[in-house]
Image (cartoon, rainbow over all chains, first blue to last red; front, side, top):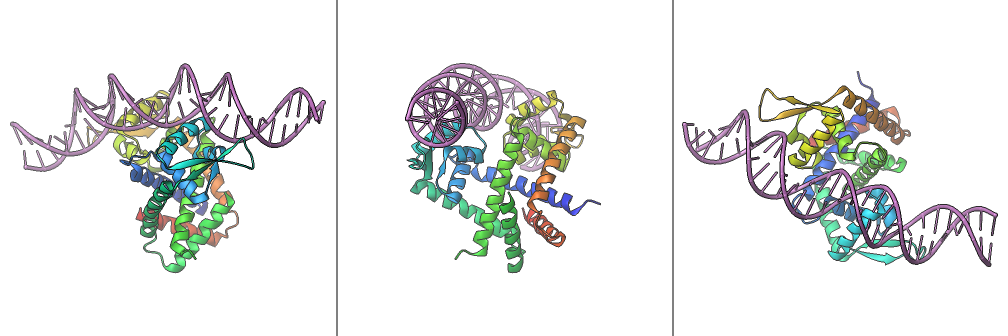
Length: 139
Length: 139
DNA sequence: TAAATATACTTTGATAATCAAACTATATTA
DNA sequence: TAATATAGTTTGATTATCAAAGTATATTTA
């Protein structure tokens, strides 16, 4: 008999794997790459961010990110903004077009979330939200 | 005021992003690549699997997967097994060494899960497990 | 304060990952 | 049986990625 912790661990990994596959499938066939959507997703959720911080979140070096952001600037998704607080760094920010892409993508996530919790009562949804927020706070 | 659904959606995406960063950080500096760990994770969780199915889960073409599996066979993590039920396909299976890597990696996940739910009561953990299992079932 | 060290980002050159398309073999459908 | 579909591999070209070196600004240390 497996412990609750084992099963919880397994369920979390499974959820992650499935979301990962879903994300891959959603991006497939679009003109933007997965890392680019990932970037839009992060900037849309957290606002303008330094290169280093963004690179860490995505899991690439700043060298790699520089060329990726170059492309995204060229395609009009983001802009580089000087950071007055620390002139070594710069801030990457979504453009209007980037924000639109974020909102489109977020809408897909929203639909997915609805589908995944279609059999939940409103009370259960609120409880799940509470749990996830507490889990995220520990990260 | 945002709706519960909006917030739930946001919390799910945030959880996914954080787990994604964590995974990246855990693999960093190891001799295996992220896709390889991903493969080990999937095979460890679901057992032997056809190339096509595995490629879909990871989000790459079978061509890409063939060369990745070649490397993993060479490094002793997996083997190819004939599939008697359909001779066009083959099954990819973890070796003893691959299983060890899975268990090592799973232990890290286990630790993480413990940390993330450290402030949960046993009852809450069971409820979260129930929710996640229901969410996973809808996917 | 001045010098030394650290951090943020970019550039460059080499390596590795990825894809689409062509190819082989087996299954399924007409 | 013939035609079509599916699973996997190979190949050649493209793209992504990294490590290391270079530039500029901050921070620390002597």
